[in-house]
Image 1 (cartoon, helix red, strand yellow):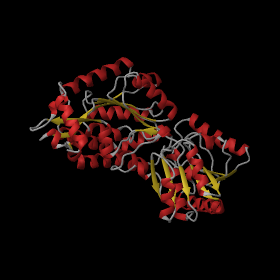
Image 2: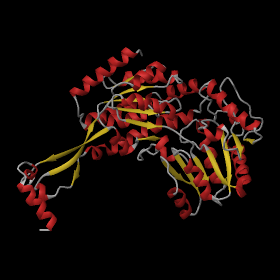
Image 3: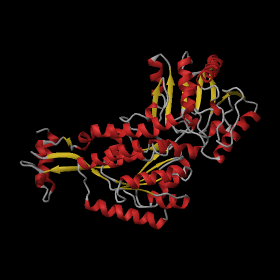
Image 4: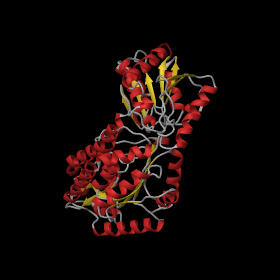
Amino acid sequence: MAIGSLEAAFALQRAAFAKDRRPSIDLRRERLGALIGMMLANRDRISAAIAQDFGAHPVPASDLIEVLGVVGRAQHVLENLEAWMAPSPRHTDPAMLGTAKAYIEYQPKGVVGNIVPWNFPFDLSVGPMVDMLAAGNRVIVKPSEYTPACAELLAEMIAATFDSDLVTVAVGGLDLARAFSSMPWDHLLYTGSPAVGRQVMRAAAANLTPVTLELGGKCPAIMTPGSVTETNVESVIGTKLIKSGQMCVSVDYALVPRAELETFVTHAQSFMARAAPNYSRGDECTGMISPRHLQRIEDMLAEALDRQCRIVTLEDDGQVDRETRRMPMSLVIDPSHDLRIMQEEIFGPILPVVPYDDLDLALDAINAGERPLGLYVFGADAALTDHVLDSTHSGGAAVNTCAIQSALPSMGFGGSGMSGMGRHHGIEGFREFSNPRGVVVRGEADLIDVFYAPYAKAAGLVQAVLSGA
């Protein structure tokens, strides 16, 4: 899409919103029903497009996350929309305001933009659209240029399902993305890296556009003493295998009691041998999104090897397949803090395993860095896991599992600090893309006129209040 076409699409939606600023609940339900039908009808095409863009991608993962995840999110909204749309009453002091009523009403914001990353091209485009449409908005989506097959399919799906004055897709590269950020949206959602998030927020500031930023960070898995069990290690490694680590809430590194370090490695090897013995050569493995991304991950691993780090490849004879961009999963044991894998969000199939001797010192190290999008703590001692949660700060968290907090349709999802701001999913998502307008309806027997000149009556009221009369 040319920049001029984007501007025309925006003007079309803004004019349409001006004619219908408060869509009925029936109309919103109809739109969400159409969205569900669109996702289910295109299930096979979605899987094929994702596999084409990634080089390789498990079909069941596409079905589960990119299709059914979105459908489940829409169904949850449909079940709760009436309650969410209802005015929320607020207290009024009858001594001052008599019989007045006050409430918050959730208005649609208007025309909302969504800049989508490449790692979940449908879940992060159509998923937030659920919240946006539920709130009564109109939506323009900008897919990633790294997933051209998915972008073209998304544009085709949307055009076949919705009128362009309600939802449309802007397919294009970097110039279009920059122009997109600079549009005077009524709200803008960006999902991606903190570096680009700064640019988006800077462009949005020129129009005072409110933004939701879903960024990333180095999400830790904290194994408390005694928690390095087969089940818990399976949760960590299994999560890391999703999209080959190309997930913003993936485990970025594991903190493990030094005495249990080898137990962690053994359990990781055992899980991979049992669940995916030929991982990088089989259908369970997702390819890196581009040759450049593959090279970045290889460079990180090469740096660790050059620095004499112990590297455990969780696959016998695992090799990089450059045609499909698949590669084995590797553990890097006790890496130096200054390595790239400890400084950058990895976004690939490398898991640093960092031993610690004192849990509180390990938590201090986490808190010395930027706040992660997700934080995972393992342990059977509820008091100890609560201590970890109370001692840290993150966008979301999970106990004895990983990443699931980002997949619950009922739970707001987002970051804190460098990992983002704002929330989508659930009632938090509905409210994120709504304007909570406060309304007061004047009744009878009030004292509102004390705010007007002359202020003799106000002085008397103030004196009465201060004297306790």
